Image (cartoon, rainbow, N blue to C red; front, side, top):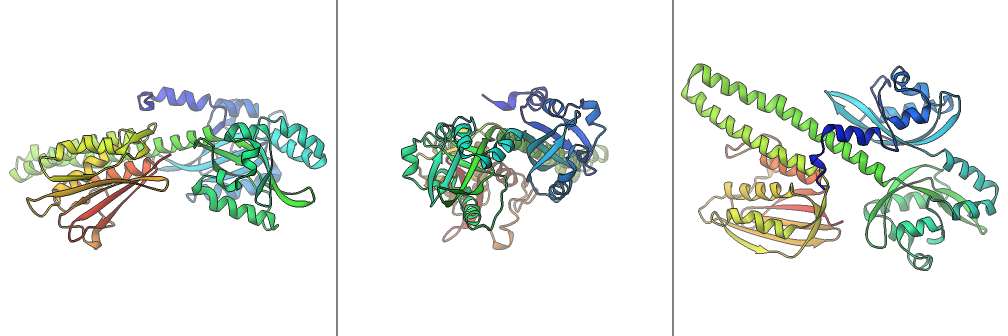
Length: 452
């Protein structure tokens, strides 16, 4: 399914009907948007909430904590928090929230998501009082739970087994960190060690886990140091927050895309139209030549913006070598292309075609002879699929290597948009792009994309 085909009304419905509370407030902490679940959770109407600030809802004992976390957001950081809020009827509830900065009409706003963890908080308190109650409630809980001790899984409930796909026997034979996503392992292990040593208190944070069949899920937990069978251990109840993180990431990508398109429309294209208008009004030949170049640039901007739009859509598994073979057909008459391709499967979408095309076009444009030779190779490096486009051109001087991916930068009179868009697309796909020197001459562009 191509999510990019859905209109703005569809996305508004998704956000408004989300089971997670979603809200937006400005730098004065005034609420400017809440979805339906926030109304239902707080018992206030949307009209009543629009007259309040974020602080009007927060429990007085948690105000200082929330103020410090919100300040991080307006300093450009995303943050997690856990606090109590007071409903209209005076009842107190607990929430876990995730807030990040977003830009709208040149104004920085805070986009917050929350899930109610009141039941989880109540469970934590009761678990401390009665170990037998712990076993009854946690074993039957829909929330995954575990106890780690001596670098082994000492206890898991059925929900965690269902989530990971492992049996209890299988989990008892592997190191717990093998369940953690490689990119999160250092962070999770450090906090685990510090907590066991009594250097870190109870806290709520999120990380990714890997299931037995290789799927990735986000979980949010509140690990605590406990005594289990006479020895220190770490225990936690988890909440599967995969949908919440995916929704947040999708909203963030949509915001990045809209900001970029807004810039292109307001700044780049309007400036080019000014030059074209002047050419018509003054009738000077030099201005006409410049106007034609600006028309080419506008066409390129519109075309490349489509690649950005595709990049924020749903990703799926592709064989990057198949895409390379398809795109290079249009360049085989322009260059001697050699292939060293293996089947490399990565998470991407149709936008990667624009990246391949831009890199090939760049290699041809920067050749210093009629004997253009390009080598394309693919291989696997750990969790990443990699492809390289290697040319025999004049290369890229060290002093401009950091500039070639900037918008508008060009050394051959081009639009200066191709490599900028290529980098933006790769980043939106969760990958990275780099450039190296080739020997004896030329450049190597390397693109790394996640395999799962």
